[in-house]
Picture 1 (spheres, rainbow, N blue to C red):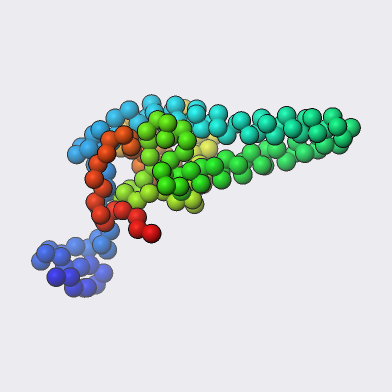
Picture 2: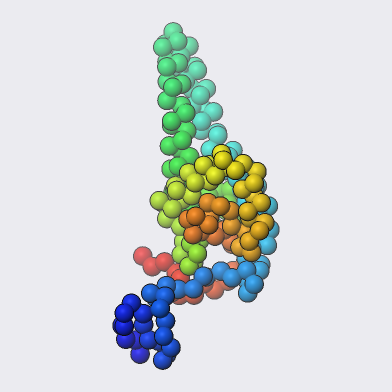
Amino acid sequence: MSYGNDGGTWRNEAWRNDGGVPPHAFDPLMQPDLFRGVLTRRVFAFLIDLFVLSVPVIVAAIFIFLFGLVTFFLGWHLFALLAPASIVWAIVYYGASIGGQHSATIGMRMMDLELRTWYGARGYFVLGATHAVLFWVTVSFVSPLVLVIGLLNGRRRLLHDIILGTVIINSSVRTQVSPAARATY
């Protein structure tokens, strides 16, 4: 039976005052394999993603250089657009990758990682884009210490993961996520 009463609900004759929010989907004590090696894999996934992001930027820089030679150096004014375009490219890449069906970037997929919300749902575009922006902001301010935060918690979450309510799991370990935590479309 489920009766509404001042924001809480009666379920199985027990009072709950959590607003019906599901519990955390991933418990490091019950599912330690989901978090084993995640920090190391994240570092390598980041390096792979950095390579994936840099290849189109390098190709664009070469194109602009050659275009500048052909246009008697006028084309080199496009170099001013390269930095903003690189930022937009990175945000779109992370947003589309994390918001995609795998909920992971190319580097994360290669390292068997997957981003999930704290309640188990897959990522979405805005979450992926925000995740990337917050990562770069936190790395800019706390640089190498951002990995220390991951060593101090069981879920191996970094500062931007904690702020956004996300968790990175080892996707090679297949576990059953509770139906309430699955995203339905």
